[in-house]
Every structure is written in structure tokens, then in C-alpha cells.
Length: 224
Length: 230
Image 1: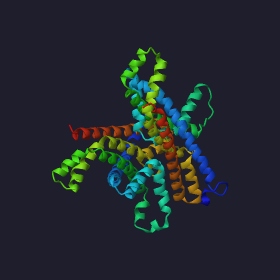
Image 2: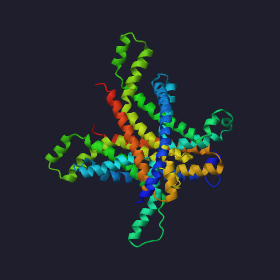
Image 3: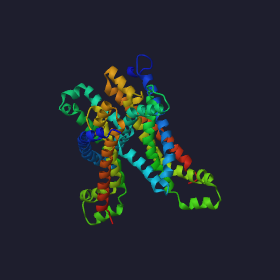
Image 4: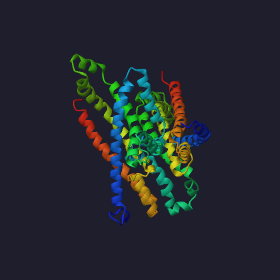
């Protein structure tokens, strides 16, 4: 066990963890909006809109995240037309490609979580709103969405942790996140166990924090 | 379409073989995962605090650390570990472990952590009366487990195990970083040599979708089979 290496690599890995957290938070925020948007589409009675939203979540949940990143990072650059548009400013950066892939991926899972949360809202609650003369729009924004968000907290907590692990794939497109730096240190020192322990501990610590924040929120917004 | 031709002109046969490789790694990893679950589920349910701690550490660490990091640990550490063990027995030559074995083992350990949780949940949700009834009937330990508990556990576990299978199948794409030629690696090679990454990665996505779709259909059948009588 090479303690010195562990101590020396700790600050480097900690710095890289900041990048991991940045990737995670930006893609979660974008993903939440995508998820909410598609969850609402899933509730639409129009079969085409419904199918479209289902197809989106099916494709992104049925394929590995690695494929999604590679399609966006390596694949989209191949389209000549895209290179001439403004979008290219974003798509040529591995950082933004990774975020787009993560956001679309977590968006697919989030839309499923929110959809099932919307569907478990008791009709009585909506009826109560209607009988009070509240408009449909207000019922949706002020009653349905808050309840759905509360309902989906436990599942969404899991999704955050899965996504945090998913951000490690950013290292495959040259981003030096926690896993990227860990791999770099491993391949230069050939001490995989020591590096794994330090990097793993940082990941576990972040998992622990996320887990407890979600637990706290669940308690705070519990119905009882 | 020419790109997908079989033979020397296209990548069809290579991708077909790569798909078989993905299936093979996934199945072996799933089986390794079951073996791990077989060891760790009883430890999780045990009343011994120490055994509990071991099993909980396993599932918490594996489920809290990215799969890619676990794969790097095995990829870079596997050779060292095997050579260390071999050196104890007096063998000091360089040993290279096969990418298939390292990959299947790494994914298997990950899959095992999820399977353990599934089995623990399933066993815990079996009615206590079932255990008591089995005792009253005078079944021995094996009879109790194989005739009463296991069939019911399987019925409850299959829907969640199908999720574990999906996770395992998708995780095998990460083994491509170790050079094992499965769908992802083959697409990477094909994309590199034809300079058509968009086509090959999209095709890889289609292959994965096909695999998840077909396996879902098969698992649904299994589900029906195991819930007969309910």
C-alpha cells in the first residue's frame, strides 16, 4: 500500500471531483426540464405526441450512455451542415457534448419518474381543486406539479446517484473528471488499488451527501 | 448499406460477432453476479453484525462508485493481483489475463451487488407464515429453501432481475475501454477506419435496442411462467 501516493493524489482527485459535480449539476438541471416536458407529453391524449415521448424515453433508456456520448461527440461532427451553424460552437466542445448526452439521458429517466408520479396523484385532489373553482392551469402548476415532485423524490434521488456515476463516462471524451484523473494516475503509476480507494471514497462521500439531502427533503415535504 | 455487408467489403460479420460477444459477456457477468448474490444475500440477512457489515460494504461501495472506475481497477489491477498470487506459488513470469475474463468479472461484481439487493428484497417480502409452515411440515433446511422459499423468491425477483439484466447488458459497453471487441469496440474500429462514426455508433445503438427489446420479451415469458398459480 503506497500511502504517499494516496496522500499526493488526493488534492488532484478532489479538484477533479469539482468537474464531476459541475457536469452533474448542469446536466441534472437541463435534464429536469427535459424530463418534465416529456412527462407532460406522455400525459397528452394525442397518440402521436404520446408515442413520440415514449419513443424518446425508450431509446435513451435502452441504449448505453457511452453510445449516446459517442454519437453526439464523434457522430454529429460528421454532419457538414452542423459545422456551419452556430450549434457547432457548442458541439465541438467535449464538455458540452457530454452535458447534452447526460441531460438527454437523465431527461428520459426523469420523464418516466415524473409520469408515474403524475399518474399516482389521486383524482380527488384535482376534483377538489376544480370544485373550488380553480382554473385547470393553476391546478396543474400549483397542485399537480408540486405533488408529483414530492412523490418522485425517492426515485429521483436514485437517478441523481446513477447520473453521478454516469458522469464518469465524460472521461472517455477527454474530459478530466474524477474518473479521468484517476485513470491518468493509475496509468502513470500502475497503482490501481490505492487510486481506486481514494477516488472511490470521494464518490462514496458524494453519494452519501446526495442520499442524505434527498432524505431530508423527503422528510421536510412529507404529507404527514 | 454496403458498410454492413458480410465478408471483406463490409462490417456486417464483424458487428455480428461483436454482438454475440456482448451477449456472451452479459450472460457470463450475470451468472458471476448470481454467484456473488448467492454469497452475499445470506450475509445481508444474517443476524451477525459483522457479516452484515461485510455484505453492506460490498453493495454500498459497488453501487456508489462508477462502473468505469471498477473496470479500470480490474483492468490495471487484475494482472498485478494474479501475478502476485502466482508469485506465491513460485511462478514469476509475466501473466496477461484475457480481456474477456477481466471484463466479465468486473461487470459480474457490479451486477452481483444489484442482484444481492433484489434477492434480499424478495426474500424479505415473503410472508413469515411460509417459513413457519415449512417448519411445521418438517421439511429440512434444503427442502425448505428449494421447495418453498426459492420458487417464491424467484417470482418476486424476476421483474427486478430484468432491470439488473438491462443494467448489465448496457454496462458491457464500458468493457470496450479494455480492448475487448464487443459492439462498442467494433463500432469504434469501424468508425475509425471508414470515418463514418455517425452511422456506426447509431447502428450500435440499434443493436443495443434490439438486444434490450428481445430480452424483455423473453423475460416477460419467464415472468408468466414463474407466476403461474397466482
